Image (cartoon, rainbow, N blue to C red; front, top):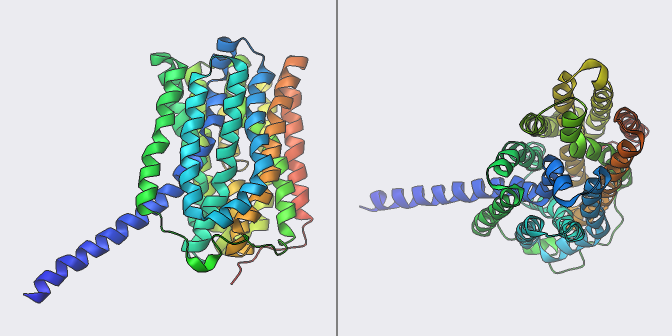
Length: 405
């Protein structure tokens, strides 16, 4: 009698463990997707926003600026706050703020209020990486972190892929506001999942303490500069690729959305693959140099668009997804590898400060150049230069990222 009773209990316990682990792994990319989805909205629905509010292209970029600069300014403080409060609580709050931000975007009656909603999205952006990086550092052993970090970071591109498919169709069927509102309710589902499956922080990691006040490794500064440069160039592609495809190359709204979806799909694969390669084969710094070179190629391909035709959009989307989008996975892995668990949030915040500052400045500058010059090619060449500068920063780095014990 006893064995027959024990076996079902053991099976139930194993099933519960599998469910919790699966929920934990799903939560990581969900937090990233929810926190950054507003940027997908501003890119995919840029034409609708311009028509609705009567604004110029650079003002669409200014929405990205409002979100990203807010995230950059608060990310160092939120990184320390994550170390003190705990990764689980920070992840739950990030999902809640993401829902609030998207709903504010959906109901904004005027452009200035839309900018205010974008400011709230920046808080979600700033909280996403410190929370998820710390969760990985606390609950996963070396050897699994590269792949899981890649999957986690691919959440941004999963959001890009799904947004590129859903938002144009939803906007055509119900209007762009309803499409954004529906998307904004999705993070609530993941908040419930995270509350049920994400483990609490171990007490020895310093939750409630000072978050770690020791010096950060020197590579963190270079990662912040690299992130700034790839963020400034990458946001031009992420934000204006759909509008470029429609205005300069004659794409329809659905076709332009499909290009964003392709970029997202390439980014998903790129982040997972490069995260694994960085941890198990080449090392993070070497992979970051490769990604910068591929990003330069993507920008040059876009610059050739007026001569080469619409096919460049698809090639550029693939290259961008595999490079400028994928760097986050390798950069975040480098933080997890080099920064002690009690300081992971702080290190993430420092790198995010550079990256989000680049995101915030790059989009409106690119949009202004198109408005002023009347075409996109000079902007794409500047983007290529920014990516090349990112390559130089990492190539000259004397530090090699190694896995900490």
